[in-house]
Image 1 (cartoon, rainbow, N blue to C red):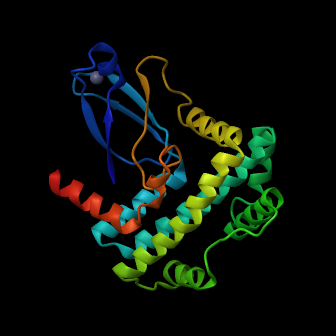
Image 2 (tube, protein in one colour):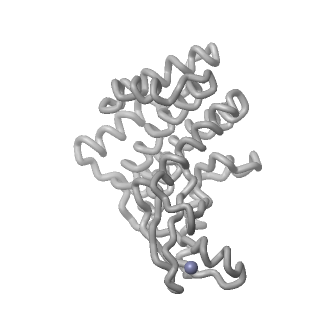
Image 3 (cartoon, protein in one colour):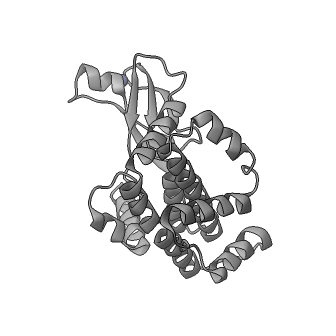
Length: 238
Ligand SMILES: [Zn+2]
């Protein structure tokens, strides 16, 4: 998965003559490069890890890597649960340093993180969350831990089931604790742009499939299969 990044210094100088570079997705969300006009640029991607990981999974399907797709979708779901937990704690004005300290205790074990999510959700919503079915969890474990080789249909089905878990939770989170969601997004961007030089820095957003800041509710109804077709078409155009 490569993304197209525009140079913020070119944008400042002349919006009609902006240089672009294509870069591979990075773990830290920051892109430092020299544009074709020689500017030193520093761009921060605004998307959260769960948004980016899900798109990496979709691109893996297009590329025919179904095991990798399943693994990225599963990672996206785990990071979404982390986002949900952090956003609720931020809404309740728990300082970052305390949240980070508590997260450290669950960081290495995804089962602990899932437990944290389930009970925070229950506390806030007074009901049990809908998570992946046992059958899909068994499928994921087979792929990730036992080397099972999924088909195209398996990968689509699993990705769609992750979307079906995340989307309603995301919309609900934005409604119920908008401040916490916003604070968590801003903290993520601030962390990613740490150490950026004050000049030539910029922000960027990409149209991911799970999209935190998509305004239209219908955006969240598009099936994974349609997104896969869109990615295939966009590659043909290129
Ligand atoms: Zn430039």
